Structures are given as structure tokens and as C-alpha cells.
Amino acid sequence: MENIKIGIIGGSGLYQMPELMNVREVTVETPFGKPSDVFIVGELDGVEVAFLPRHGRGHKLLPTELPFRANIYALKLLGVEYILSVSAVGSLQKQYKPTDMLVPDQFFDRTRARASESTFFGEGIVGHVTFADPVCDELGDILEQSCTAVGVNVHRGGTYICMEGPAFSTKAESNVYRQWGMDVIGMTNLQEAKLAREAEIAYATLALVTDYDCWYEEHDSVTVEMVIEYLNKNVRNAQLILRDAVKRVAEKKTPNQYRDAIKNAIFTSPDLWPETTFKKLEAIIGKYKK
Image (cartoon, rainbow, N blue to C red; front, side, top):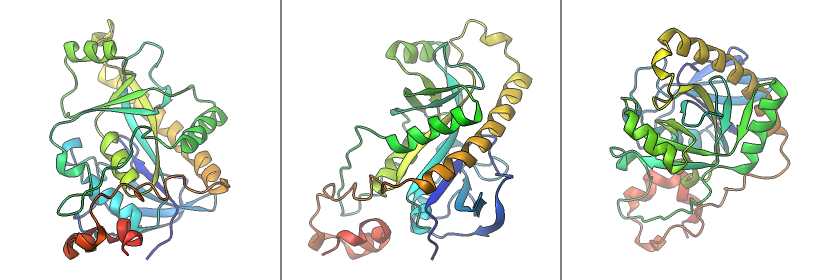
């Protein structure tokens, strides 16, 4: 099919990449249904990438409605080994200011309606992937370096708490998350990170801080216009960061460190794998069939 090594998943506000050249649309069908949208494939400074608007063009899908499995599986089918995910987040700590960037190294799951979209395994094949360190540190380094190169204030490390949505937190919830030591809050990245690990794809998040969550004492003075202004500024910065980061990923000398992430994760003996399930997961587990 394709052999595109780098995938970009764009979040709220990031629906396109104006620097993409030689653009074409690619439709990918998966055993898990249709992805959020068609893929926009093009070149950033000569490096081919596959771009997917997470919520669909026009922002048509709620976080809970996202076809996470289809999105990640489609990237696998395209040959992607590295995913750079961009996500708008709220800040839970004062030091993370609107228009700052944060590259988290941990996730905390507060979703409750996405069990079927949180793993590729099941239906006769059991897998338990290692997920203690959910983010690729090499990609994290690259995103931090690219933020610095572009001149954007960046924070490396921290925990992204993934809530269900679509409503934002109550003040009580927001304050509890702060007491737990969470750093930023969003609605999408946890499932992506889990599925990317099962698909043996390296994954990292560029979190765009658009506002302080409702815990902040001056939260009520923040207007919609201000948030949109911050979001637009973040989106342009993210486009420049991604352009730099893609080049760094392409020049990386070391292989994808998660290329064998599920080698010892599949508990079910291959001779017991149901044929229909194997066919469904072949792009991921095919090389382990003996």
C-alpha cells in the first residue's frame, strides 16, 4: 500500500498543514471501520507525512465518538512508525500558561465509555502490553528541541489526565486533579497512546495550552474570544514545530524503539488464534504467527 513513516494527528484547531506540498488524499479502510477522515498525505520539506484531523474536518466528532482503533490501525496500514499527536489542553498548574507547550511523559485515564476503543485485543486473542512509560522519549526529545528551535515556551514532562467529556470539569473535579498532581487535562490522547503501543508505533504528544482549567481564580474573566486567540496562536506555533520535528524524526539514526513492543505481550498461543480475529489484526500481529 503506502510506506509513510511519520503520521501526524491534529487536534482542536489543527485541521490542516499549510506547509504540506504535493498534497493528495488517501482513503484507508480498516477492520475497525472508517477513520475520522481521509488522510492528507504530503511533504514537509521533502519528508512525506500522513496527516489526520482527529475530529474530522469541520470538527464533527465528539471525543467519545472518535474511532481510535480505526485511526491507529489505518496509520499502521500506511506504514507509519512514528506518531506526533497534537492536542489542545487546559492547564492544571499555574506554571503552564496559555500558549505554552507541554510534552507529557505520563497519562492518567478518567474515561469511562471507551472500553471497546482502548485495545485491539479480544475476540480470542489476549494481549497485555507494557505501558509504564506511555510516551516515546526519543520523540519527546525531538518535540522539545523543535519547540526551542521555533522559540516557543516548552515544558518537558508531566501528566496528561484524559477525561471523558464533552463537558469540561467541575471546579471540584479540577481541584482534585490538581491535588493528584496532574499537569494538563484533555479528552483524547490516552486511547491513542495505548493503541499506538499495541500497534508497535512510537507515540508522543505536543500539548497546546489554551487556557487554565476552571480551578483558576481568574477563570471567570477568560472570554471565548481570548481562548480562540490563544488557540489560533498555538495552532500556528504547532505547525512550525511539526515542520521542524518531522525533519528531525526523518534524520533520526536509531530505529523505532517500540517495533517489537508486543513480542512478549500476547498470552494466547498462536495455534489458538481464531482465524477471523487474526485476519482482523494481521497488520499488527502477523509477524508473530508461527
